[in-house]
Image (cartoon, rainbow, N blue to C red; front, side):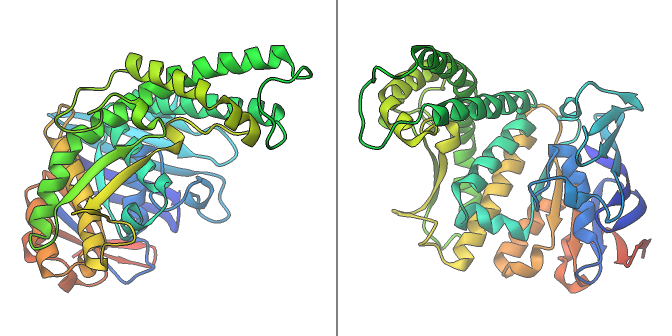
Length: 390
């Protein structure tokens, strides 16, 4: 899989860019603040329908404009597809494939697969659990695009259930069902329990199996990037705790099934009923989970050095790349956003070795010297409002 062409209009700082691309390495070189990252962000948006830098679409549209356009031509196994996304904050985004409209923007997911490594990835190790949940869910969607719908449905159900719990909230310390509680509302909560278990079990089972498949790649990648460090392990920490069958989410354990997870989730929801009514919020489900990262016997967060944290973040991205490359759908495009300047010589050499073998890799750097010789390919100079081949 590779991008043959990228075109953006009114995206971030760019009024218009028309950029031919090809297989192998392409390097975008220019001072910081000139828009190099914005171009990789546009590519990543087509792949994930999200930005690795901001949570909403509004900052993606150039100041003073109503919408942004991103168009890419993707070649996969000899077949070319053109994807166009119109980003319009405050209105519904629109998508086209080969100039034909599609029902929903998420229908384009899977056409372009990418793995992006950027300075923001340090948050995967040092940031909040939401960063790691997002990492898992984005990788899950890259692996199987239908999970974008599953995640969207879970978020919808969670909002509705939380609204109901808030309306039923009990004073602190009061247990059991009181006579003045609305039995209809409580039966409605049971309905939403079932909805949450249905959507949540699909998402949770998929995450557990993803972590089981990803774990060996992470251990291997970390060992190559930091051979003198402690062993790196990943595991899934679920809000269902020990109620889940032993071995779910581990490389040598049983595959998780939505049916089994739904049964456990419903059981734990029932056991958590009083606490949820007291707090007025859903306390159980995939939205409360985390990806555990450990180095030797200690958690990486809070114990890993700066170099170890970078190594772990790099290992997570390299593992994602290798996992996707070994499955159907085409080898992902590798996007490296100004990361070589952050890495020492060993980590830089390991990343360059993998990147040089990729079908297509796009690299940004502030200066030429930051880019390893193995990635000497097509080069573009990026300045204010211009991208020029050199």
